[in-house]
Length: 114
Length: 116
Image 1: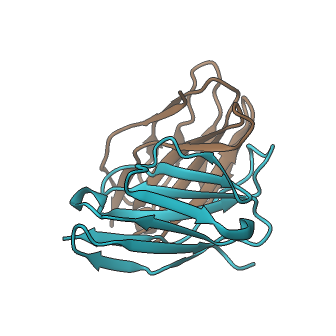
Image 2: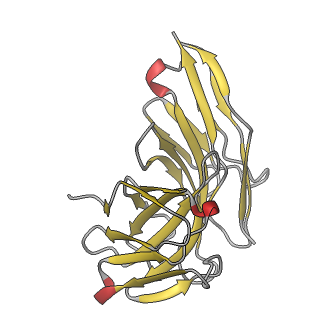
């Protein structure tokens, strides 16, 4: 079945450091890929998405490129801020069964210190 | 646009008691999801509705969990009887649905359940 694998956390960085959170996926179809973010005490919210190979999703300085050849969708940011501290979830959406099926990774906690 | 509404935000119950959660999705969204998020883990899909029909409940513990979506709008998730391992955040989400793999799922704030 479909699955998403993320790097273990927590990831601890100083402000203005470069961020990479790795994500790889397994899917039977041709999925869309997402990064969701969860701030403390809040629900999940979409950060960015990509729907086909070589697409780059971006928002708030974060970006991720859909790499079909390596089945990856790594999240990057050039300079993190304290306010970026949150849990980040990689997810895929597959229409293989005819219905949108949304599958999440286990999440990666990011801690940014001043 | 109003978001996904869930209630209650928090619930503490004793094991073997029953509990129900309510979700009101975004207007016009055909697909509704219930996820269970145990502390430190990613969301796990419990049940997925397309309008008022169930399209995936393969991971729903049907001996104790049940869910319905009345008239294809609001939904309730019930646990009876609850076990200690049911302690988790229960997330409701909705999306446009059918044939739209690239559309965003919108999440509510979740209900944090503690079973003691």
